[in-house]
Length: 165
Image (cartoon, rainbow, N blue to C red; front, side, top):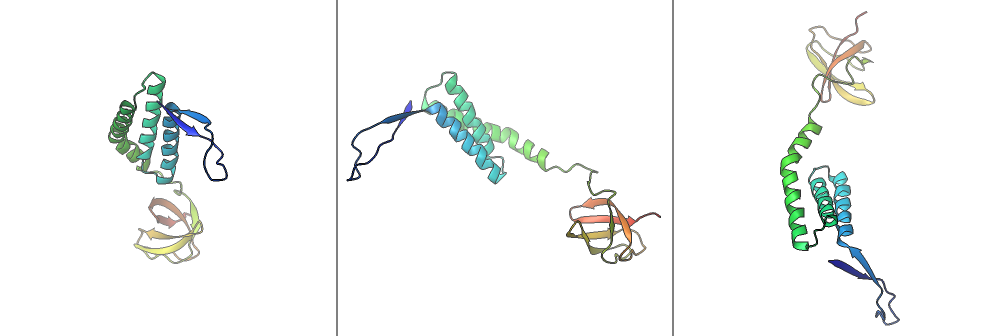
């Protein structure tokens, strides 16, 4: 099945006097659909459009292999899209959102406190140009201006202890 798109210049009345046809293969249409859906996935980040974009590529490959029935193509698109969505979306989303336990690129970083942090307490401090909640799990207070080391992070909370001298 081929689509026909006419590229014509309208006359003074806005009517099209002649027809020049440009044939677009359905394989190209499926590839364009796949590219559009995959590109749109970048904007959403939901991993839904990605699977349907890949499904459109599957249909394009099926067309190259000889499939030439729009009904079967749409069914293949829908079934492969939903099947891959159900089978893989949760696994990929979980793998990408799972934090690596015990890892922090702030661990062992040093900073000078911008505020006092009470013993067994918390205080807002400036770290890397942002405000963080510094947590002191020791019973001893840590004074403003004292150099501390980060030994753990949880979200926007940094756990600090005085730097050993």
